[in-house]
Length: 318
Image 1 (cartoon, rainbow, N blue to C red):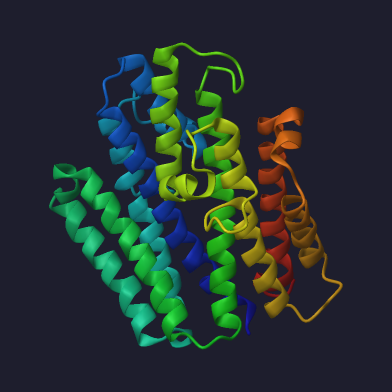
Image 2 (image 1 turned 30 degrees about the vertical axis):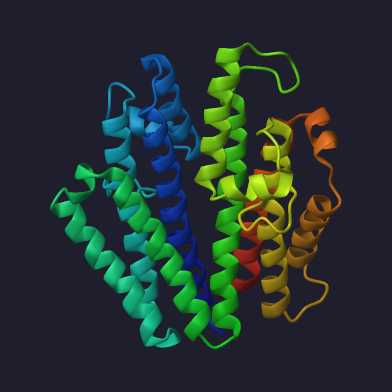
């Protein structure tokens, strides 16, 4: 496959996944902001969201204060923000259009219809009437895109590059979410907390789990009250949790092996090593050495892996 075509397919999927991840985080923050809480706590939630997406600086250039309405506008419809939902869906559509011949009619029509519909919804200010419903729509369109892709595309390199983009983006986002959200909780993991702290923590951890569709999964796996170390274990190490780091790296490694012809590939070696550490890791060891340090290193390695994928497979002449 031409590296240019692979590049468009890879980024089409990454942008679609990024739009869904942004919608998930915005929805959880929006729902949480409706709970009784101080203005300072609510503002911390929106600041954390900007921090997850590395958008604090870009936001500060346009707005004087951090509040729900401005953050939602900035992360939903601001086309000067390359990570906004509208920008991501537009970029996904443009990448799909560039390789229209490599896609099935169903995949192209799904991408194109999503773009046309989101433009209509933004223009009519429809999302402002019920932001949560809009975020559910974005998630649904992303689910639809993945389902149509797997259900209609030939299982060849085109599909593997699309899956590679999806799961590399997902691993990056989940790591950012866990890192920032764990920092937002002030009470010690294992220390005693008063009743008010415990109530706040329950809603906080529930929000984290819901943002990655893991609330019911947690209940099924642990059958216990929500504990921070178990939330971390579920989202980092559990291979059967669809949006965990381990599950995402399993998909990255599997799809890299399918597109690569060189068994000694440095890209595959790095991905395999990172996956092995997740496979054989233990949450108590990760927490003992520092969750923030672990996740920061993980993000650096995922970004490095993305650069290696670009050099080896996606950039013409590399």
